[in-house]
Image (cartoon, rainbow, N blue to C red; front, side):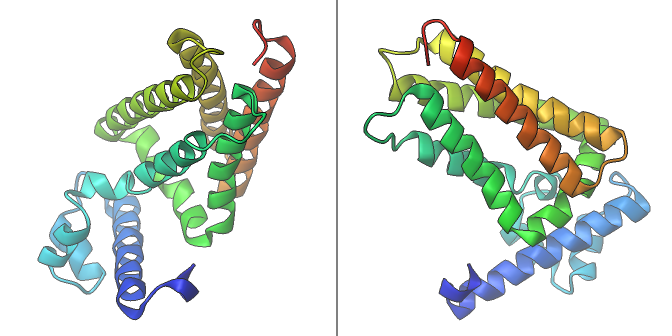
Length: 207
């Protein structure tokens, strides 16, 4: 991706990655609550003001990639292909999300620490659950709008909840059992594929 970015954009991306890496290391070493924004900025060799030009708070560092992932999936859902059924579009959207993570080594390295923090810090767990709910609501509404004659909003909500919920649960369970970030990603991907396959063959009306 960096090959198509200008010098300014590459510099901003490097600074963003440096802030995330510094924050995660401090969170894991010192504890999330004990780490200050000033310490994160200093560890990344930037000013506190620069930190706030990238993130509104240290909590936002943890969830910095969530919005990007949701937007990526929404873009796919907004562009159905001729002959698509809802299940085809949802399958392609989910796969686009997993493929983006697989191709981003930086993001893969952040997955393990971020999920560990979300699972162990109560305030982050609460924010994570809220974001998960909101993202599923957005995806359900988008899927319903793409296929209003095929899926009611309730049906779209059930489908999205099953797919995203199944993948998320499998990933979290694998991580809690000592899986690596790569293994966790694989578990989540396999779980979503399992649910999608079941929906494809057993749904009534057919997706």
